[in-house]
Image (cartoon, rainbow, N blue to C red; front, top):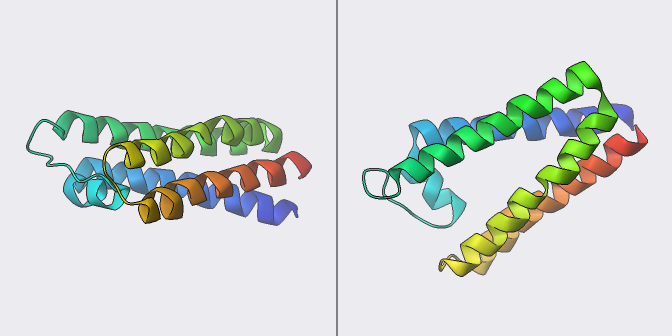
Length: 123
């Protein structure tokens, strides 16, 4: 169970780093994948960069907690961070995105993050 808990946590944190990279260097396609398309050269450019930095920071903090503090700290972090994809679900729905993206990507991500937290609590 410990190997699964750590592996899932590392994968989720690396995925956050990937999302951060994508929003910083491929903002148009990243926004489309998020479920609410935005033009990086328009008014949304700064917000896409902010999301990139936010997601990348979550990945770095998560990895640092896991490797330097331990599974319990990472579990609490994952529990708190689950608020983000839950909020993203509502944002996509509120701004005209599809239910498939809102629930299939964002809500599902929140569920996986909560599963990761639970596994880390028992690891």
